[in-house]
Image (cartoon, rainbow, N blue to C red):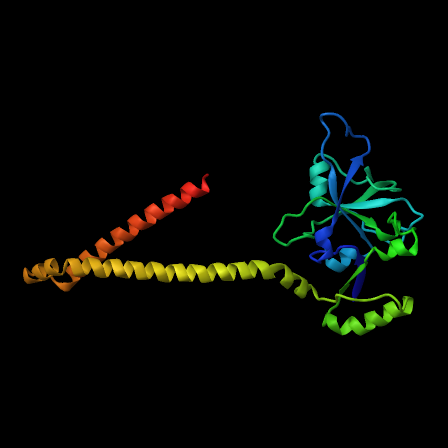
Length: 276
């Protein structure tokens, strides 16, 4: 099994409230009319976080045991952030300062793959990751640290729920007063994310089926009315030698013409509304 921790993991409820912080890039102009909006989502994580999530390391290195509260402040960024702010240069070794109290200047040591933290159907945004042990609030008092809800991410080769008792026991060895809650598998997190779109698609499918039934009923009514009006004409045609196939083609052609006119008029109305 592989275990890591972080604040606001991907697709979780807490990820919906991910902090987006401004930052400044050392050596670049950030004032005046040419100032560029530089901000990114901010995530404190532990070492091994991306290994556990199987997120690829694009370049540089991940956090390790050498990254401590007393070591050089470092930061990881995702590919979107690297392309947006360092499109023509290598970001490794560059420095940035996050706009936060007591936040030091940090060196970029790696670029990782993009993670869709908020919603699976939304494009990934610029993201920066800092070691949790270098979090500026970790050194604060116990009450402040209690506000920083930590989420553990566990990867297992077998059923992950079988590890729950062992995980609870491991946490209890550290502090029996630490509460453990909201234990879910990744499949459950994903199911929660796609539940609303699934319900929306189900409702659309139901309304679509109802619309098709109503349309078919309307077409049948029009066809029946047209045939009833032309009963005398049809009788004369058959008396003059027309066979059933010819009469059927005549009726169907007229019905298809009416359907085509209806589709054209309805499509024109829809296009006119959407183009406004």
